Length: 124
Length: 107
Image (cartoon, rainbow over all chains, first blue to last red; front, side):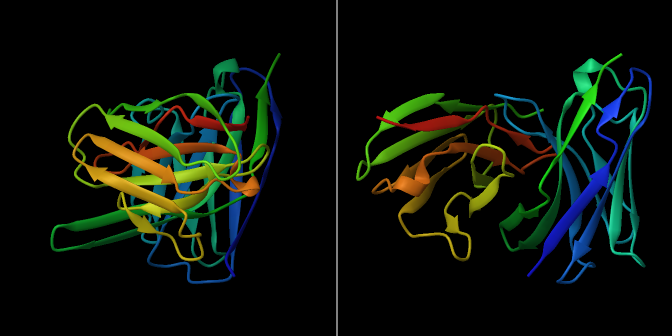
């Protein structure tokens, strides 16, 4: 059974750097895309970005200038760094496993395993 | 970015009811659409991928359909465990984007 365990600081001041890490337990680590998603109360989730086992990334353009998602395959962990946070970055942050598959006229990309979420509050 | 618009934003229903939620994409996304269920304080749970494929272990009372810009999610016979918020999500183009959600409440 795949489990994602996430951790990191939950209270930040404006202009500080958000750092979260997600550890993967069970299942294969390679062959998947490892994602970060955030959500504010009453709103739909917002995709932050992903990283594959080779270190390649896709980022949400709205956050790209402040975000880095990195991977440590030896530890089966991946991390989120979000610089210069403001109150608008207050949210629950989730890590999630992404499965990508493609074939003739077929493509899938879904988030099938998620961490429990970390509430990050930015306040002076 | 591709905008995903869900309707209704909330609905009230009873156990046994048929529930239908729609999701409209701002541009053609083929059938590159997923549906998730989320309960308060929990992470989203994948129900359907590729617009109509049921994730392993998900009950068959959940159905998805559609292609292009218009999609439908149906709960054939609502069960007590199904009261939750449901989200659509497109993966035709990065960034992945989610709909605003539909809260299914008990009538």
